[in-house]
Length: 274
Image 1 (cartoon, rainbow, N blue to C red):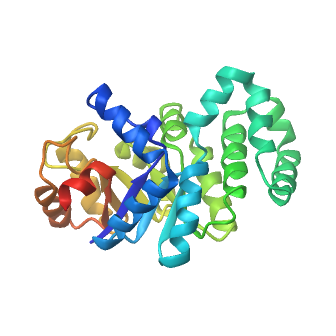
Image 2 (cartoon, rainbow, N blue to C red):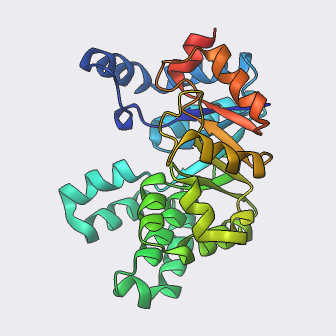
């Protein structure tokens, strides 16, 4: 069974206390501390990193890939950063701000994509806007060796709730056209399977909560595990320790018994497993 590290900006995570939040945000706001975390993960057999990208994380991953053969699974776009820009600058200002952070070559590629989608973007089409944001951020990560690409779960859950199946099919097609594998990250795998049907096979990896407590498993553990077994080579487990209620060893044994392809490790679980 394979392991992947869940790496996202520390401000975007949930913590059990304010002091814990201060500790993790202070520590993992430094690229060198992220690099230490990556080395620790590598020493325990982690060979993939599922990352929401920002400047600090990109810097650490670039340095790590110089020394280590590790797959990056990019989760795009960084919705927390976009929402902050949206609050401060408005919709147009947020998009422009993100565009201006790109390198010239990425600006050209993003501009061409926008011209092709000008009609839907002008109509504020949800799918077109989400895909444009995702492509813009992926274009800015050209310095990383990216293997798989996931749509950010906030957009995924909105699209699942709204039954916007075309977002997923178009996202998977565009990701494959760029030479990457498409992944699906969701807390609602049953809804995804129902909405996408055979199209679910377009995603090489599906990441969903899986643990012995049924924590965050919607609608329930039994139903989710039935789906996981049907696609065992494609599903990866996250929330494996049920928020710290299950020991690391028991959590991994449970995932292995189900026959899942792998498990996602968060920094706190990584510390507990050592």
